[in-house]
Length: 296
Ligand SMILES: Nc1ncnc2c1ncn2[C@@H]1O[C@H](COP(=O)(O)OP(=O)(O)OP(=O)(O)O)[C@@H](O)[C@H]1O
Image 1 (cartoon, rainbow, N blue to C red):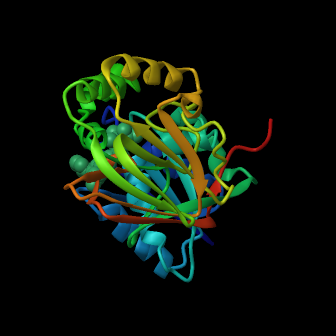
Image 2 (image 1 turned 45 degrees about the horizontal axis):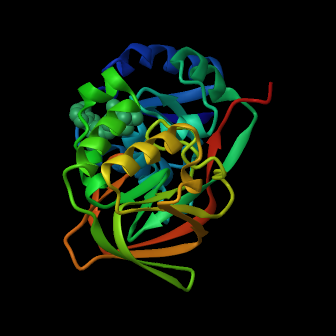
Image 3 (image 1 turned 180 degrees about the vertical axis):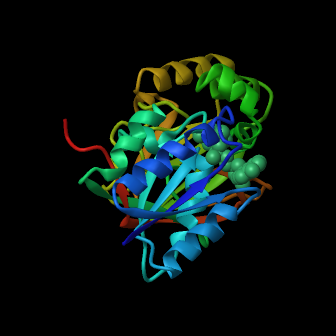
């Protein structure tokens, strides 16, 4: 019999994940799976559950939660001989990973995709010794994005990030960053460095419109030191999907990137607080298999 492990974060989004648990279990059982359910209670529980799913040769791991839960789940796949397929029921406030893969944000519809015959091989990023699925951000802005409250995200959606960004860019100085990418060097003052694997970042599905989930590339944006006027124009470019065309934004793609700073700088990884600089980023092409909706 096929085996599915459900990893559910009851605290994600508006704390409604548990309302959908029985439907997920019933749907999987009706489709021939033996189902085990693991509820997360604290940081890294999802990673530990996913490691045991790999060791016990599960066919499928279903992550019910937000991008942070997916981040912790995929980190259980590192260096495992057997890697189950991943199914996603988006229950977070932003759900970038689901958006990028066109997985329905409506939970009842997302459940139906779990038996889709379409499986997509998706790139993963490696940051030092962990994986990331969506985005790494560094700079004072990244630190304040980590501080966006769940309450604000639920109320304002992606605009919670714009609100925090404008507050940050108008009050904090830019940082000195040293960025090496595929043999090239950029050094200067920057308000934010972003490395994206998918088109959707912070709920803005247009942030990196060229980023395909399986293109083997890290899509990088260096946002230079901004004054208040440029902060507004950069925010508008972001909204209208032309961030890379803004005169104060440097855009490039790479397979290896290192970021360091003489200052003490923290990062944000897949929406959660990440390690301090320096960081090394690389791409692991088509590393995990995600169940996505069948073609219309
Ligand atoms: N039972 C729990 N109570 C509180 N926090 C939890 C629990 N289980 C896991 N966590 C933590 O929740 C965070 C992940 O939340 P997740 O990102 O899934 O939801 P979200 O923040 O609402 O969604 P999004 O990232 O899409 O905005 C991780 O830091 C994880 O360690």
